[in-house]
Image (cartoon, rainbow, N blue to C red; front, side):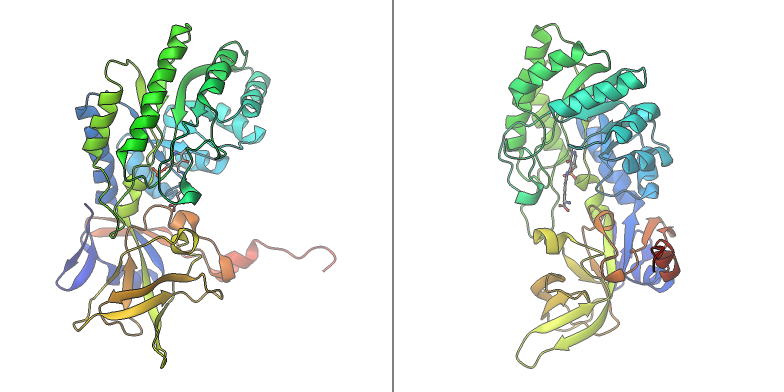
Length: 422
Ligand code: LLP
């Protein structure tokens, strides 16, 4: 459920018309609904609670939407943050998320990033390999502290989804095998700079089937039990993110309640603190990208191009993953649907959002919205083709605020300087 709906023939975000935002801020622009963000977080929290999983840490995956206002909205409800870089640690802290609710993941954290995270006091560093374990130990010893770590396991399950976002197969770069996890956990418990507190896994993103998760989680439970039998303390089990969302044409993903019930079944009787790292299921349907039609280019030989002012640099998912986003006119015109190829102005064929999409008839100047763009939308945007970074707006009820202004060309150019010999 989300808070984008037609009211008297016009698409609204909560109580604000998207056309009004487009007038005020210009296009392209990302628009987020506070009510949807809050609802998704609370539905997940309550589902986990109701299934008897206690008060787990729900660490929002900052990579999905790193805007500080979005993080603050979630942080105010008690969300933590799953981060993968020093930049994301800084964003989470800037949003007021307590370091004890921050989990640091990623396969290639640098010594500087690890030191920064330890000094900030993050709850846990998810370690993905033996060399990384050694590095965290060294850095922590240098700082005369002990790093709370979790070992990230690669459960070697096939989770479907797009190959570029599947992470849980043995051939992927993430995590260590179960056998390695046991060895590293035992090593870590003897290392002066480490305090192993748990184990973690994440099998991929946009998963619309609970079966691979259930298989992975069952293996994780057995690992916790094996470690405990060896006398090792395991406080925390981090089950990653990954529950998919409906991108309109896909099978309906499992509900948070079904997800929570599955976990409760797999984990029955296990005393442990659970942690989760959801990104997409919280943010995706809480955001849209609003764009304006520049031209309707009807080719005599048949194809009908809708050329927008938004491009692949603003929303990369279709170009990168062949992702499908529902497209809704902001003020749908009456008349029979027309089939369009929807494209951006960037100079490459990959800058195509979709082909052969039937939409209400559109004219130059019309606004449309890419739905389900609140996760991995603005967060993956760039300035390719020297297009200023797309602005972001947060709506709450009848109010809206620009939470990342459109960058000016002066700001873009001010970051660069000539080499001394030029
Ligand atoms: N935890 C870890 C360790 C992750 O690698 C990820 C996502 C998440 C949590 C959050 O997963 P989610 O709940 O959002 O599925 N850019 C791609 C998605 C990449 C996901 C990478 N890892 C896309 O636009 O589909």
